View 1 (cartoon, rainbow, N blue to C red):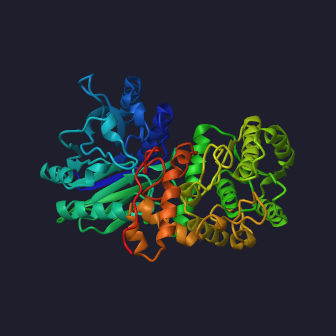
View 2 (cartoon, helix red, strand yellow):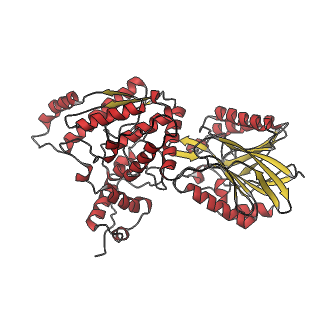
View 3 (cartoon, rainbow, N blue to C red):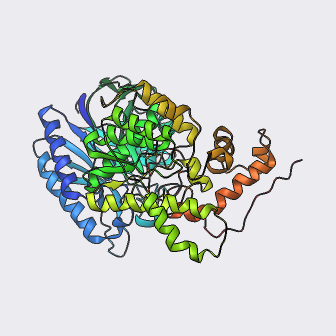
Length: 555
């Protein structure tokens, strides 16, 4: 039995469904590991098929393509190194669902496949729908060392790791497809430390990195000693290939050499998640770039900055679409922001379109006074114009509504909600300001220093669809609104619990009413980066027709 193992943690960015691409990526890293004298390369969960595959996992042709790719990769291991590669594995019973598998490749062949036992079925996870659970966790042997391989959710309860320890595992190697949310890194670390404490075994946690639809996988791979000490950290939100050197002593296996990266927190963490999510959504979908309406407001400004950081200013087109209610300050602020970013800004007045709609529709409005209808026509004229530009230029349209607006329906369906992606969809308005402040103080990608004019951040938010309009004409102050929404959305708190925090009962009831009545809009909204634990669409799935309303009972 060897007393020393060099294990490569491969924190890479596969693409769901792109099996040939993922196979080539795995082959590259296996070659890199061989050149570095590595004994074993550990890849993330379902690396070959991409994670999460959702209902692609129901296609037998998809299983077969992944299995064939793994069998070809096994040939790369004939002279070392060995590899652990995630792949969908067909069930021996063709009438049953496949497995979420981890193939052990060594000596030029597939030595065995471990199957994920604990299939998550909450939040963004839907694995019981598409996979059969594994029955017995596997221990693989490499150079006389027994390696336990719990897969992602398998470490979130004690049973699988306890079983692996009982089978003689000496090190726990954990491939993961764990998406970002604000609290994810702390939760993963706590769970991993609990398994280490229970088993007395060191642990290497290898996570995917990259964007997939609404999800962002943040990487943040790490290793723990048998005493629960952090002995390795890979960067978050970027790819990494780390050599970890393990040696066996009197107390078992210990990691002697490994990198230790710093992890971002707070607004920086949110910002980097948005950049990675947008970059991969655009690039993996094959768009040449993005365009958006730059209004002179804070939401469109931060969206433009994220786009420029993610794709480069030359792949971002901005348009100002003024109406007669657009202020001079908004025109100036949009131009200033575009200049600082180095993105192209064009101006297209929607006045002719508004006049045309008035001519078309006024005779049929039955002499009713102007109201929200005319405001929505302006927003829809902008949406129609931007979608036309997207069609003609080939750039994907970004929509720019924040989570506070999405929650209460402060957005126009088929108007400012038009677009293919939304980087701030899961970011509350108060968080938008915090992210803007962080980005103005930092230039992480070397694109532009202080890209958002201070007046954009400090002026009162307005949709500018009627004279002297302000958001707070219709909504509570955003600090109050976001606190109430956090209780309703993130916590599922009762109205009494929220009122007890010092909020007026009538305001809390109003926010609840707006939240529930806007579900039909959210169901039709563009996807966007998941940031928190209860993102609309992926996590919080409410019925559109919903007769339930909580009530305040406290006096």
